[in-house]
Image 1 (cartoon, rainbow, N blue to C red):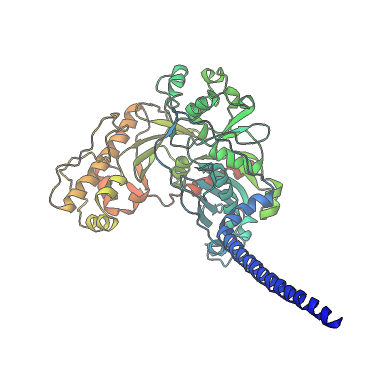
Image 2: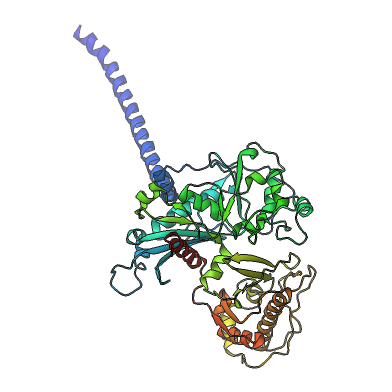
Length: 536
């Protein structure tokens, strides 16, 4: 009996042992898989850490990410050039705290502060100043890549950047900020549901052209009006309206700066007369013209106020989260180019700013308004004056094409700026010019090239200076105030030899602007708004 039982038990024990071994292998395999999955999960979390940090502000504020609906692609709308999509760059808060006190007073009370932010083409900056215009803190961020349906989700990227910049400002600085303003790229346009704030389509970027709408716009607007350009805000509005999409009857148009400011103050449908110029607003009469108000889409047009006007208090949830004062206000903004002009602090008629970047752009403060779409000349209102501007296709881009930075610096030192060059060029990267010559077929002229690189660079720098001079002369002929002094911004402002050449060619005092960042100009708008709000 016992023997039979042992015989019966033996195979059962063997089977049990085999099963245990099998289960052990399975358990080991399972544990191995779990460990591998855990490792992969940690690696994924590590890679996603940067993106999680960007979205942290959105979650903390319970500010929902708007659902973006891609507009049907139109053959009529295009982008004139690709927009760079840089990788996100983060800065630790400590990087900014080190800059918070520039007065040398050991961090003593500096009084009220004023925050300006600049949202440019590839990134954003902030500058905090005191009442005397001294910089107390500054910093920058590149736009993070948020993708939606294989395209850049610009609205989410700008939004995340906005709250990241607020986070970057040292808490001790935030607690003293009395007023906030910001600027955005001109003609960058968003269309929202006026009831929910939902973004109804991907933003129209500053350089996006909608030639399909241009004939309709030209048929209603006066000849040579600022809106008579395929990249104008009005052309973008008309192009979207003609798609006949749902919810268009309850939509509202905002510019990039308007939308970002709305996230801060919560009052939907407010703009400024600098941003609203390219949608057809008349800053002289301070109203939309009748030819625009009679259109079926006129209900989308935002209310317009002067730049630097108080809209309301910063949202309570943002004040509490970041530690801004209870009485911190948000003011209307402006465009990035206007903010850059404001930064130079050219406040009297006859003062001008030439920006020597990839292209040559001039802006002149005038007592008289000048507009001519043929030359791309238009005037922005600045309080009781006019900022008249034009842009040439010549500039630093052609210099970079011909010389390295090291060559430009070395060769410039060998040029005698007091001696005129006999070479006469029209430096362009490709055919076409609008200001000060309106000729879409104008060919580049960069020959003959002398054997000496010093002589060649001298000829190019002087030729660009002559084009600049023709620009100011044209503005005067159109009726603008004559230029009396020129401040310089952009990369070309670093070239002292070029400044001396331009001073000789223009016959005017030429110098480098002390402040050139648009975020500094936006902070001056915040200061202006705070003073007006306090009755000063």
